[in-house]
Image (cartoon, rainbow, N blue to C red; front, side, top):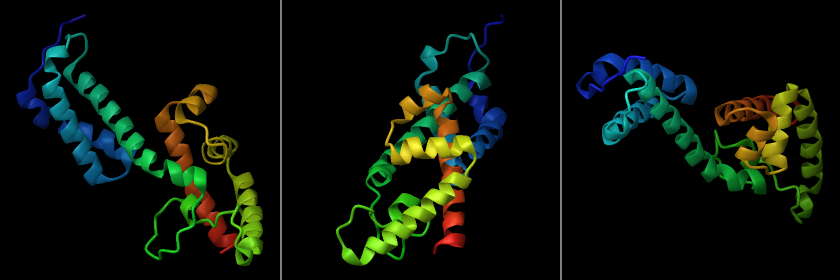
Length: 184
């Protein structure tokens, strides 16, 4: 195997577009993707002394970018974790785009006015979950309802964290659409 060397002065010209396309495909946001690529280049410069030359420069940078993407999802999901488990209800009308779990009334609420609404929503939500593809439904239940950790789910289902979060995102999108049609 040929030994590869780093040439940081050419990274932007040679790899920026490739890394950006890789990142935007995984985070679906151009600004975040740009930030991740920038962080990748910065991390590459900081850890250049650790480069062994066993892989090509681009391969090494992709490995760094993969970790940056995972860190990005860990960061945003750690902020949402409490909402997923506790199922809080927000009355804030500016909550467009928040996770489904944050928009649902608390089924354990003692508020008498919401009891019927909570029961109806629970039935509608369960029906919508049953309409999801089997693996999406399974992942959504494990993460959101059972409160399992990302690592445990990934180990049990033999998937990687990126796949897990894609399935959860798709499940949430499908559930919101289903609830908008059948309940709201």
